[in-house]
Image 1 (tube, rainbow, N blue to C red):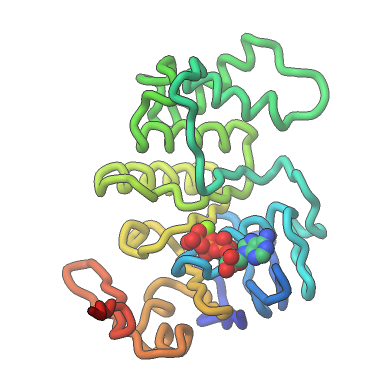
Image 2: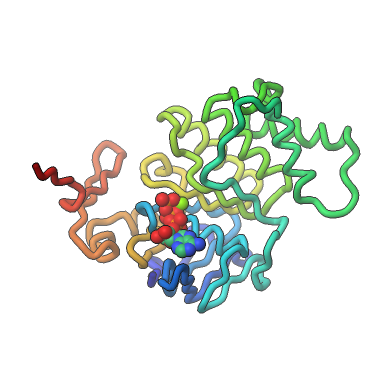
Length: 274
Ligand SMILES: Nc1ncnc2c1ncn2[C@@H]1O[C@H](COP(=O)(O)OP(=O)(O)OP(=O)(O)O)[C@@H](O)[C@H]1O
Ligand SMILES: [Mg+2]
């Protein structure tokens, strides 16, 4: 996926890049899933990673987590070569299910973010409780943090997973489809929380989604992936008829109306044969 810089300067270029991906190709099952991908992400960047099923979004996050190696190119995090299990990276995976019978409370799951990843001596329990409470407040989940996580709504669970990822004070947050299965209001809430966390902590986030609309007004950059190719830039630069038509390799229409963007194509319609 040859990713072109739609604009030379990053939207919030400051300090040094948190992520630098240069000419990276990832091959899985004998075929390139990411192909010649290059981009950089800076502190304060809210990046939407958009693309259809199978475009390579999760693979890109797994690349940054050091879970899949590049077959070509280089990846640097915080100015250093990529390592696995970097505690400066917070991750919420795509699919999470909770055992209905589990008594695990929201706050227990958040605390696992400390116990699970921190090396060395565990934090004293008072300090741990204070840290859990602080991050629960930050994501607005304190009201239901004592309930079993499996009984909470999708939006509530998503806030708690965000809290778990934040408790290690990451500088880079990787969120794989945190808006899936949420209604419009919960989507907006989660995006607003992520946005204010990124701004207040001056960290970077890559948030995977299928649709740009929930992220408009929040994201600084978009990485659009499709069919082994990709493009990065501001939403205004990337989400354009000509840019996406080139990216997808077939005619795509981008229609803007009342602050919303519709990305559509004649390829979209199904065919039903008797
Ligand atoms: N371990 C693997 N071995 C072989 N192929 C793989 C492997 N992991 C992923 N793939 C393939 O790589 C492609 C990209 O997968 P990926 O999960 O990154 O897509 P995605 O954009 O996250 O899709 P979705 O929106 O459905 O989550 C898919 O065709 C998938 O089948
Ligand atoms: Mg995925």
